[in-house]
Length: 216
Image 1 (cartoon, rainbow, N blue to C red):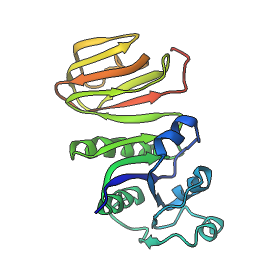
Image 2: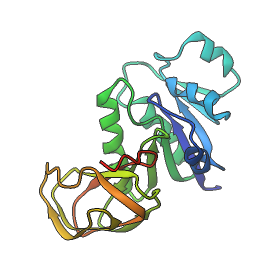
Image 3: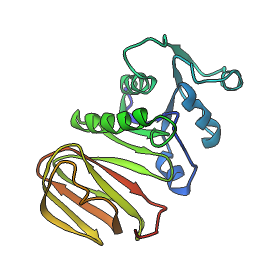
Image 4: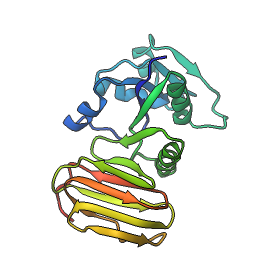
């Protein structure tokens, strides 16, 4: 089975930026319910369309009538996005991109997506989320580097107490720092280019705004 990158199209906000286009290059796509509207913006045809279709209008259904569908009842034990992830993994996905996972009108869904991102990382999956204007990356024990434009904003949201947190090549560096759960210490940092993170224990998500150069 060929392993590859799959992009899950979700119903949140999505802006087609140059950075987003580069990130999605070569990806395959699976749409979750109303996330199919982003397929037209991106100029792509998904491999599969899943969901209960309660947030999909007739115009969208007609426009993508040729895309294979898997329909599920509205009363189910998983979100359409989670079903789409399982479909991508079953097709051999080696990495996952969630497009339209951030923002939107449902804060509960947006928060759940961040939790799912952390959970996928703990299961060993490579994944990140994007709206085009904002990106989310899991932060687990170990090291990682994220290529961000110089001057762009990012924050770290801890889902637990963090220990041994180090951040390099930023305006406000940290070295082997212990971050209490619920602390705002890691909100609104500024990248000086590619940012290097390391963590000894805990779980967190990095929220980055690559086009926000306000330097707040």
